[in-house]
Image (cartoon, rainbow, N blue to C red):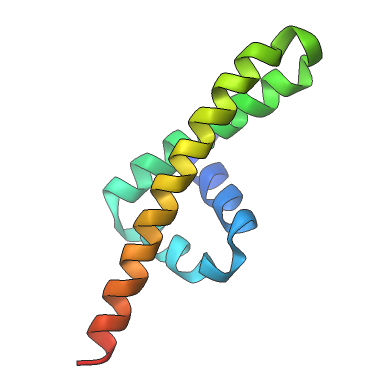
Length: 92
């Protein structure tokens, strides 16, 4: 069985390496982030599978590309909020 949380976090870090610390921290401590990241990992894995099918998987790949992008944007907003909170707490 695939570890979708790890897959999602790895993909997110590869797309936003400057946020690696925040992503990894949230992946260890925040259940909501973990759930979204797990869904993201599952969607990205499915996207790659359908892309490998070529023409036959094109329609499904398009669906999972959109799902992946929506989840990525949601995760990056989560990361942005966590970074903002962290900076605000550090300046007290």
